[in-house]
Structures are given as C-alpha cells and as structure tokens.
Image: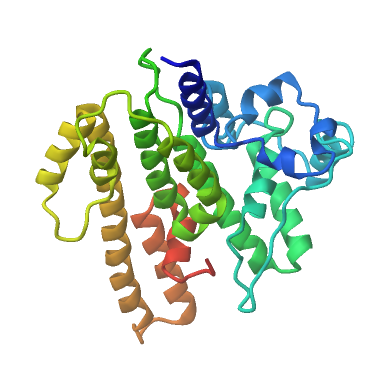
Length: 325
C-alpha cells in the first residue's frame, strides 16, 4: 500500500476516533502552552472530544455519590489557579437569541471540552457545578444556565455511549472509515439533536468526509462501489422496507456493520415513538381542567420520569417544549 495512502487512512482514523478533541487548545491563543495536564487528567480527559479511550475514562464520566464534592470556588481555584488550567481563561462561551434560547454553537463545545480536560483533577459533578455557575454569570439568566446544563448532560451521554470498539487488527480502508463516520454522525444526531450535532461536529465531519472522498476504496465492488456505502449506511425513509434495507446493508457492509446500523435505527424509532406517546399524554394533562397548576406540574414531572431514563429527561423536556431547547 502506498505510504501516502496509509498515512491518509491512519490520520483520518485517528481524527475520527479522537473527534479533534484538542480543537479548543488550537483555537485559544496561548492555551496550548499554558495547559499542563496531570497524569490523572490526561487519562480521563480524552473522553471530551468524541469518545473515551479507556474504561477509566468512561468511569470518570459517571457520577460518584461517594466522593466529597468541593464548592465551586474551591474547584475554580484548584483548576484555574493551581491546576492544569492555570493562567488560561475559560474557552468558548454561550449566547442567547432574541427569544432567550441558547444558540447552537461550537463555542459551547469548546467550553465543555476545556472543562473535561481536567477530569482527574475534578469530578464530573464538580465540573457540572462549575459550568452552571459560569453559564449563569455569563448569560445573566437562570433559564439560560439550565439550557446549557441540558446540552452538557446530552454531551456527556454521547461520550459514555461512544466508547471505542475493540480493534479487529485489520488495516482501515476508506470504506470502513466512511462507514464509521456515518455511524458516528447518526449517533451524534440521535443524542444531541440535529442542530447541536451540526454546531458541534458539522465542520469536523465535512473535513473528514472530504479527506475520505479522496481516498480510493481498497476493496471496490464495481463501478458503484463508491456510492453503495452511503446508500447502505443512510437512515431508513418513512415507509421503507426495513428488511430489504438490512439485506442491502449486509451485502454492502457486512453483517456486523449492518447490525450496528440497525441498532441505531431501532434506537431512533424507539425515541421517536416515546416522544410522540408522551406528547399525547402531555396534551391530555395540559387540558385537564380538574387539575390545579401544582397538580398539573407534578403529573407532568411524573410522566417524564416514568417514560424516560434519567440521562434522557432533560433532552425530552427540551424536545417537548417544557424548557427552552
């Protein structure tokens, strides 16, 4: 295999797995020189970009109720005065539109990623509390801060889900990397929603796709080899024969990749069905004249808690219009 092609595929694979996690450091003047990660932070912080790189990194993203949580002032001092962010200003930022809604912006991800580089120096609960205080101070709004925290929880959920699969030992091909990019892009949109996934990852995905489009397939299957992959990896259309689509995927991509895509389809369908059913129930509750305002709110809270896992509730509330998205 030519060295140039090998380098292209290897570099693209690393970018896809790492998610350009260090983008915030490259974009913040002087930040790269100032950041000094502790060994513990280095071990845990790679979860920030697109996926954790070790079981320890995934564990670091999970709340630990047994750990004593420091105050926000103590955490800020530990990170920005004595720790790995010493001498560095908070990166990125938050903006509200004219209606008071948080704008989907890559700058929000840069703030998230900067804080996540300090995992090991601070717990995920401490980072969340610090982030909430930063958002409240910068936006001057409790509702704006709540919107930031809703996106933060979805971002953490994405990192927990994108733990790396074991290596097969075979060299990556343009087709296998393109498939991985398609799967990753769909999962990001499933968890974050389309607007936030585009804001956080759109430019990155476009750049990776451009690199892949210039890499010839290692195992072409005829003149349609270059177009068969995107057609097979796409999401199903409403009313489409899912059995036929799955057969197409297995023929073009192999059974393992087809199974992963099918799992994404099923997760998306289950989410959509749950949202629709919850919206119907919500409409009935909102029209129930016999309920007081307090009783109605309690019933809505119980409805959300009964239908969604804890990590999905903030996102569901945003989708259902119960909080600003």
